[in-house]
Length: 304
Length: 246
Image (cartoon, rainbow over all chains, first blue to last red; front, top):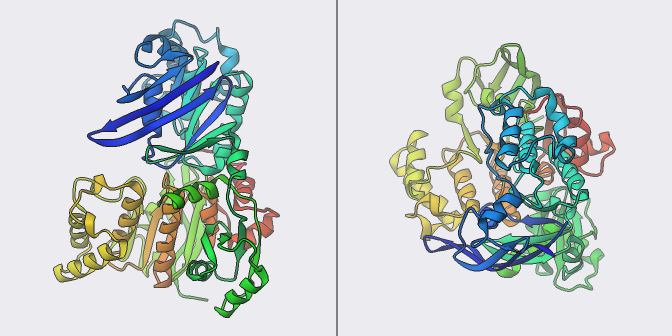
């Protein structure tokens, strides 16, 4: 059965469309990523699916239950970690966890196996007030609280925003462990590199889904051969690429510029010569694997 | 060697027993794009506050645009620009009002504000939005606008604290083009980011771990030194051993 299904889901605020007819299906046990920048509509989708916000159109179901009609049942079954820290800052780690367990008519002991791996890292600080925890620890406690009633579907809204690369990696390792316990996870992120860690992703921008598929299939659908270029001076290289009539698209990508050409059979060596005439040196152009970020940029450019 | 516009020597900040920033020493040259990286809680914000003249160091020295961080904090503030993801512009003022407000704060004359403001709006293509509230603009535009406002008074140095967090990949790159152009004009860029691909766009980067600068070099040299293919791996190798988080 599907864990989540939305059909033409819509939300508008004061006439502005935040979620524009979004249709998604998330299978049970799937780790599904909603990938898009701030303001893309990710949080609105999360809030409708967790029954905290009423849709203005379309429909959505979680575990086969309707988000409007069956909201009470949905609330018992799902776990939600909002983007903003929402635990009680004046309660200790332990008290927060016990509180959330009690609200859901269960005990910490009953579902301890689910949170054990995460909670052991918090245990040394269990008497500390939640408000006094470090950013990474707050995040771990919030995840424990969202899991303590053994939800069927876990909603994580931008759990890694503003988090450094090391902590981000650790967080994704935790998600993989949860997935192994058959919990369906919907996670949103503005970091494109996290997409490859999901079973399936939806790329979203301005309330609209640009594409939904496995990361591998999205990457495979990229329409052109892609090249990585570098030279002695990145800014000059980017300018030269931008001005070239042979170039279809070009943009910085870390150490390299990513380039695709109008003519897919272009002779790279002669193109390098053209760049050299513009004063660039140490020019190197070679084929490069496509990433989710390239696909996202491609979709945005083709829309514009 | 180019002229140094930021010089720190064993700059330190203690809060009680806690050493937030521990004897950091480095130089940044005029027109350089300097990436200031570190894990959450490594001490970046504390260091940046001292460099901006907002927090008095516990020990060590630093000179910003030729001014001393202990005695000349007011001159420092006049010669730098600052922008962060969290605070940039007033959402309830229009684009033009924000420009006038910040221009006034920076002490620009009215004709100068008008002239600068017109150019800024034209460069950003915001003619249609000039009289709209900043709060109504998409995030990407806000970030580009707030960068332009942060350098409205032609500061020698601009400090950017995670300027591109949450911004879409196309806008993120447009933002970096603006950074490159400002650097070409001689503005020194001091930037923090959690995007490791952006670290590659910097001339040099430093990586802070537990209050200390653990590495400082060009991205290429750092990768070579750590035998890493990407900056992500360099960061991971250094920050993995961090004892503290924010």
